[in-house]
Image 1 (cartoon, helix red, strand yellow):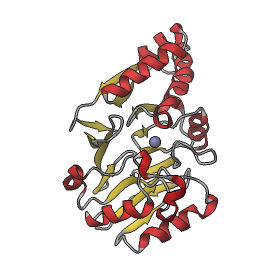
Image 2 (cartoon, rainbow, N blue to C red):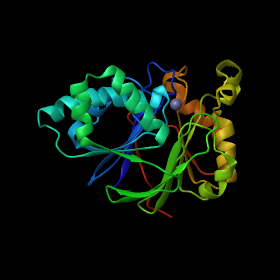
Image 3 (cartoon, rainbow, N blue to C red):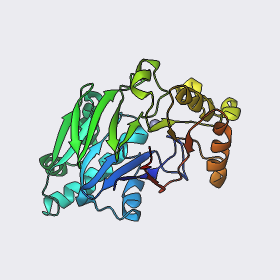
Image 4 (spheres, rainbow, N blue to C red):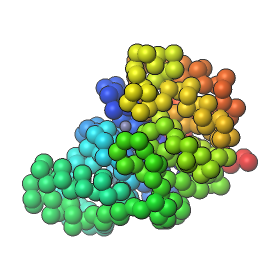
Length: 270
Ligand SMILES: [Zn+2]
């Protein structure tokens, strides 16, 4: 059985929430989606009983700090493990060409050459093109360009236990992708803040959505379950309640506002 564990659900500026990243896990292994931006990922993985040597597949959606930088911390730890024979199998890193250049560039400045040599010995970069398909841990994935207004960014769709699941990264849905999204069972979409607090957080000026605007858009496309993440953190433990309240009147399906470390299980009912 496949489930998702949210390692983080915050946006790029959060301190108490970790930046948005998660694992898709089943009996065949884990697939790490983004890494967040600090060494915190190592703690989150440990809390989730996921060993670094068990991560064989990583996807990085785009090259912004809150999605990519912890890969460098993982490299630092993993390269030492590789040097000592604790990691021997290849790790696939799925990303677009801009992400690839960013990883290579940053690594070259912040990691010593011996560790770079060790990590590149065990990594296999898979540079993604639009509509590329790969099977990872028994699940078929189709990666696609989300047609971001900002930095080049990829998402993916896959079938999990007969549910069409779509990961849309951290930009508002581009209408050119509407037909891909329509009728999906589960869609992840960013929600930078509550709509009633847009004037405080200015979601729109940094190319993000409010919870209400995201829910309205996805409701028009008959999405069944909407996962809202990549939020601000000012409401503490009331976040789930407030974001759900704001969106439930405009969304006919199920709204999920996960907390950090929450597990999302997929419905079998159709
Ligand atoms: Zn982000």
